Length: 98
Image (cartoon, rainbow, N blue to C red):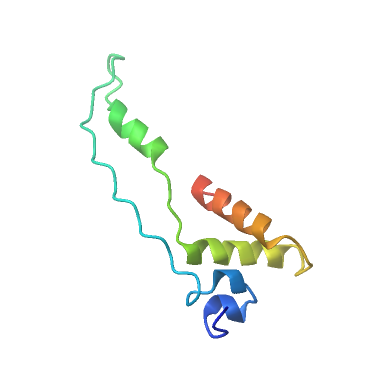
């Protein structure tokens, strides 16, 4: 049951309602790894720093995903579609940094 008052209810995204779907607890962040120097002579960059930069994944909130899903819905001209597919696509895009 949606509240009808939150951002999502006003955008008819009832399944994302802040008051009926509490967000799961966030997992603790992994411990940072020490930098290991590159084996290529003169590169001057640390492998761990490069790996951390490429492996860093943006963990979007439910609100971030819902906003992006709404943008996808709006982008197709507010025509009927699959809310779940929009949600999954929004989550994929945000995690990929698109």
